[in-house]
Length: 316
Image 1 (cartoon, rainbow, N blue to C red):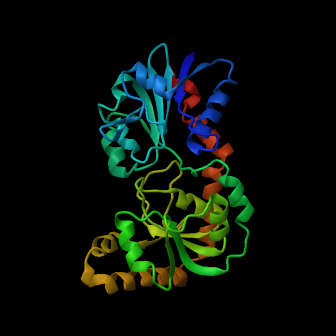
Image 2 (image 1 turned 180 degrees about the vertical axis):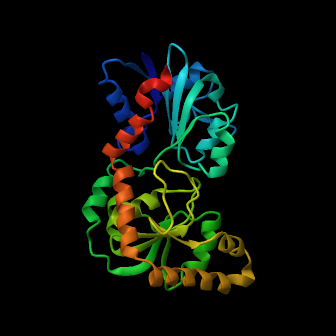
Image 3 (image 1 turned 45 degrees about the horizontal axis):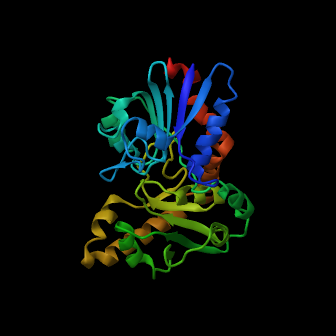
C-alpha cells in the first residue's frame, strides 16, 4: 500500500506541524506501508486550489492545520484537522469533494450539532486538543509544582466578542485576575511562571470553542472554571469531573443587557461559591491532570492517533 502524506510544517516548534511530521516518521518505519511526503501547498496546486488554505475566508481542505493521507491506488483518504472551524471543511467547495474521505477527524468546533449534520456523509472521529508550541510540555512540567499562592481566578487572553463583555464586567471583580493578552503579553516561559502562582483559572470559549488555556490549566494542576465545553473530544471532557461551569447560557445572553450587570455578577459569584462549598475541587484538578496525561502528552497522542487508522484497513 502506497500512501501520500501531506501537511505543512510551518516552524520547528509549531505543535500542529511537528506532530504531523512525527506521525509521518512513524509511518516510514512500517514495513508494509510505502509513504511519500507531499507539501500541502503542492497538494493544493495539484487540485487547482491556491496555497493560502482558504476559499472566500473559509478554510479549505488544504489549510496548514490539516493532515491528508491518501491511498494513491484508490483515492481512499483520511483527513485530520486542528483548524478552529474544522467542520466547515466537510462542506462541498472546500476541495474535499476531490477525495474519497473514509474518515475525518477533528475537535475544534465539533459540537454535537456539527457532528449530527456532517456524520450523515462522513465517518467522523473526534480528536484531541493540543498546546500551541511543542516545547510547552517542558514548561508545564517545570512549573506545575510551584506553590499556588493566589486564589483568584486567573485569565490572560485575547478579548474579542463576548470575551470583551466579560472583561469589562470582571476585570475589577475581587474574585478574578482578568487580563487582556495584547496588553499583558509574556513569552511562554514567563507566562507559565505567572500562572503557576494561581490555584484557579478562568477560560472562555474562543473561536474553536476550546482553546490552549484549557489544556494549559489541566497540565498545570489549575482548577478550570469556564462556560460549558460543548465540543466532542476523543475522551470526553466532563463538567464537575474535569472542570466547573460557572457561566451558563443565561449569563451569556444577559451580559449584553446593561441594566443587569449586578444580576450577572451576583450569579457568577454564586456559581463560584457553589463549587467551593459543594465539590471536591482537588479531586477535579486531579482528574483533569489525568485527562491531560492521557490525551495531551505526545507519546499518548501518537498512540491514539495510530488507532484512528484502524490498522490501515480504512485505506483498503
